[in-house]
Image (tube, rainbow, N blue to C red; front, side, top):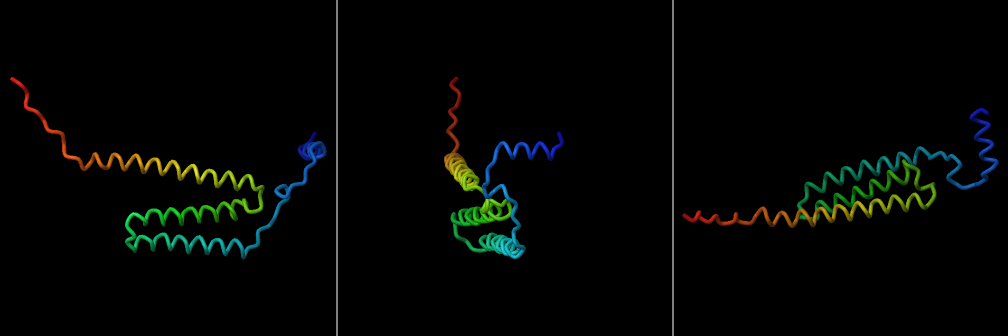
Length: 127
């Protein structure tokens, strides 16, 4: 049985007609618009470093990175046209990443206070 016949036999036994089974062509203007948006957001990420926002600099840069990742996932990875569950999995992975980064920041904040602490006093040895 050739590969084509096996695929046809499988399709006949398991009929389903879902939107993500059909190929779709993304218009070139849409891909170009997403590319321009990504380039603009990259420039904004760099421009954020020119302004002193204090501790908010990193959060603004991370927020822009999340928007850029969502654009790539939605349009270049075709999640916009795929099953909603796949988009949910992508959003859940962003949420878990945020939790892990938050835990790492909390942990590093605790160690930072130890770096600035004075060294413990050394007692002279008893003779």
